[in-house]
Length: 126
Image 1: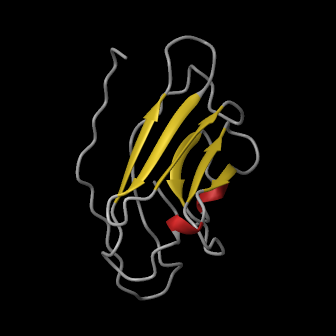
Image 2: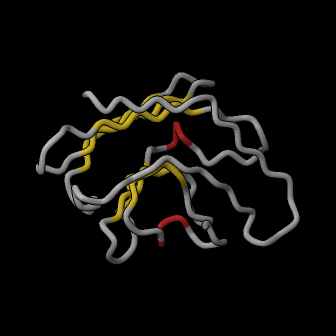
């Protein structure tokens, strides 16, 4: 179950998010040791500061086999900004089951927070 921690402390993962001190959205990955490797998406992906003002599409692709890589594409569906890349290090092992999940935290304070999930599409045949 999620706890109120910085996302970069999560292990065996690959995701989009941000820590409390980050100015921009990040792509993060972790192979179950240490903290996540973070890729800053840049000023076009500033961390939202107002509830329900941002909408993102995240596409992840990892080819079959034992060669580890994940291609990613993030699109800001409000502004149209995009960022993409490939991760080849600090990835979970190929035998680790990864499943979609999402959560938000306001750091233990009483505040409005919102999370909307439009859809999840998984294609095991790619």
